[in-house]
Image (cartoon, rainbow, N blue to C red):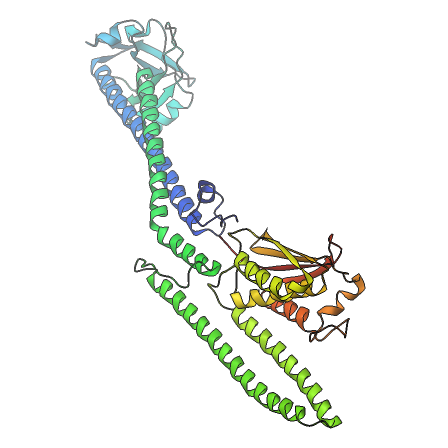
Length: 477
């Protein structure tokens, strides 16, 4: 039979499927979600901080350049003159470092008064809102990125800083600007971001794997406890035997106490049933004995009614015992052994008819219940088949899936009409009053089967007689 899918622990699909009601999935999803969120925030913070730090360094360079230009500037009636600044990059054309001085004319437009030789006749881009921003924060530094409009071999993206400052002998303040190529900074930032995200991705994968292993190892005792409980339910063990960690050992002990209590209840029920059987059978036996010694018509009536009462008592007590046993756990009965014992016995009993019993059952097939009950159920069906067969009886048993087994008993006798099959399973029903028996055989089988949650079905056999199909719980291999 197919083992329980979860008996060997959860598969990858079960671990990483949707969380649902699984504790393991919840732990993995929660931990993985937190890891991903933490790594995303960490990556964003690291790359942002690196870029801000790089721009801060550029800002310091640009601020120093502006200070040098301010110190080298001299106001004139027609504008401003800037002494030569000893910075090779500002002297070499399109070198990537620039400065310029501008003013706001009467119409509010920007007019460049001086620029570094490195601009090679170009001008730094001046945002339309720059004058207003500089006036609002006079003397402070305003920085912004320029996409790059210089006619270099390749357009240079610039980081520009501007500040509005006043010069001696000049009434209106001037706007001092410095710009520097930020291509290297952007390249470094991209490389840093690539390295950072790659490292965080590797770290994230490693942490998720660590979480998986931690949950698998940490929850392994729970899986083992579940498997032990499943073994008890399937009849492979009688109780929880292993020692577990402190956190779940009380649970294992409570399960064992529950099993012990259940067994005590079952044994108590059996005792009560046995006491009741003894209490009822003794008076009935006395009544039968007295009636046998008295040939009067009244004694015959008493004898017949006592026999009926005894049969009914046997029937109901047998059913009560079966119901009590069906509540128990850990019972496991090999089907093939029981059929073989019954077949050997019945072939001897019906030797005068020459009955041949042919049976088939897998070696691993087992009934989830007590041996005595399986013997009584199959014994009644097989005896009934031998009684009504011409010569041949066939029994086949096998697993039907979903924890069930099917046993089929067939004979080559006269069979039974379809409209009479339900009637024969009623207590005391006998279609042939001349045949021996009390008429309780099939009723007993039906009651015992129902007590175990099974079903008895009668149909026509291809051998020509009756086919009895019995469904019972199966113990897993």
